[in-house]
Length: 419
Length: 98
Image (tube, rainbow over all chains, first blue to last red; front, side, top):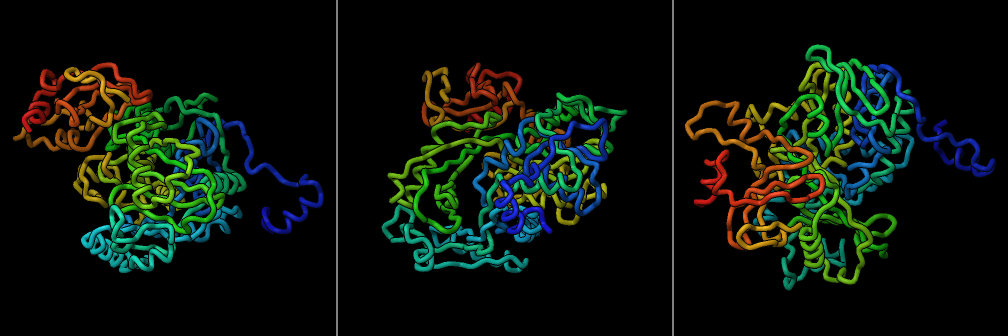
């Protein structure tokens, strides 16, 4: 019987909740492992889980410098979608979507995945044509997509101003019905618990301070809790990639670190039941089950590791929200925060062997890493176990920039702040 | 975040346009060294700490500026006109002409 179930809930309710075990152990790090995963965020934890589940590699440690899930997995706006244009991205994110669809069952942990759809609004006829093209590309590759008329959008989101008098009138939109949201903390906790139950050591408050070398080969790490050796060292540190790779002697990467802000309002009654994105700027919003509107916009636009942003972007995001939903003017903002994003030179991620022998690198998620959590770990686990990429991540190499094989979804070129 | 423009004085960051990493070295236009071009176009030092950057006071005097800014604290330790900058003469020159 599953550890978490209705029966377990009733049994524990009757015996004073004495049978619950901690969701994961707090092990002391061992002297050596088969695989060390640096970074206890969503991607690191899912990597460890799929290493154990798909490849039978359970002598694994996940090293987290702070507490589990304290980075970007708990800072994103929780949207999950696979509405990409380019084949490499579509295949990868659609695989992720399929994993999301079975994730709560697979992990025996409710990640509250809610397929409430994601709607990209078009505000000009040309933009609508472009979305029709993207929708067709998605459907060709087996992903669901539907074009919506302003009347249909108005029925779906009554609060939205779809009149011709709106500052940017809505001409239609592209809907992916299977997209949605998930509770981001539960994703971290669910993967952590599922990996722990399969024997993975999750070691919190263990900051990597350097790498152990034998010749050119990486054979382990030095940490604040002692040296730990490993046959394979995997790096999944999201916004800290530059800092961690510098410890390994990698001075330059095709990455800039930028800060992305997000916001949540006080709890409101049901207002929108989908994820909506504004087409005349950069703005996206959904409503949590608790009632808060969760939204964000563009990067601040300059290199930053600060996990906090500045006021100009706050002002811009609020202005875009009000252009779309004038009725939200009295809504009070409860919190705002920032996360550090690895912005790559083409807006697509990196999941690869190397760049040093014994090392594996997963980074460059720009600000789209949350939806990728299952497939990122799944593909990275394959790459680590087999010493070669799976066909789903074969295009996400580190040397694709040098070879000119970019995956530039937005066609912005090597300007990371614009991806 | 305030940037002290050497011409206009302290101004809000919203008056400025970020033009990116100032550490990049553009190869000579005729260079066929692909590694040097790759490094210039795609590779970044991306430090956590002091970072050399190029900004333009696009909402003010339109000067191109070389700024040293800490990426951990957003603290700015120096701002100078880009035109006097020797180590990166060619990209800075190109910038001021356009």
